[in-house]
Image 1 (cartoon, rainbow, N blue to C red):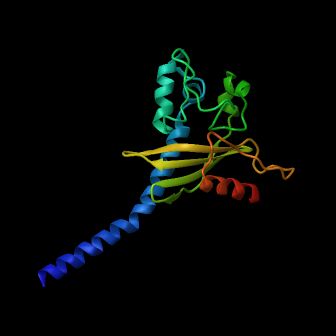
Image 2: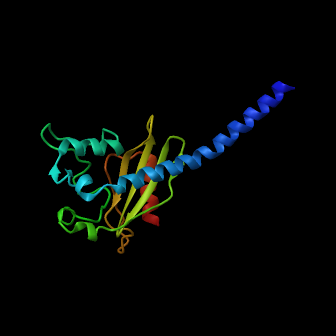
Image 3: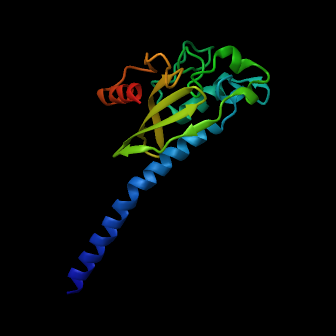
Length: 184
């Protein structure tokens, strides 16, 4: 009888743990993306730390959030980057606006959606002014990492034309999000 009670108790405990795990993962992904947006423009977009350009520190920062295959370093003496567009976090803001001394006041506030988690993969979108970014994440051993981003410079596009830009070749599941984005 004690064995049966122990088995029942273990089953209840495991099912309770499994029931809270997806919600915890959703919270973890949302907090991870909030942390990404907590860094200043100087650090994240301009590779400036304590008033000085620090390319090594910038590469380390990017690798905290993105898988190494996305963090491109053209040569040993250059810094790391994610794309040629300007900002992954603020797709509607151009490079000139980012580098302006007064950019902080003109950068749109990030509105982060709820995360959608499926096992070890997640999707979350962030609206920043007229732009929108869909982050695709995978669970790493200790945390989540961004494996791709779908960027819309304008969201929604007034003329009905809908075309986002991925950082890297999208998977079939990621392409489905692009089609959904166009329909919304």
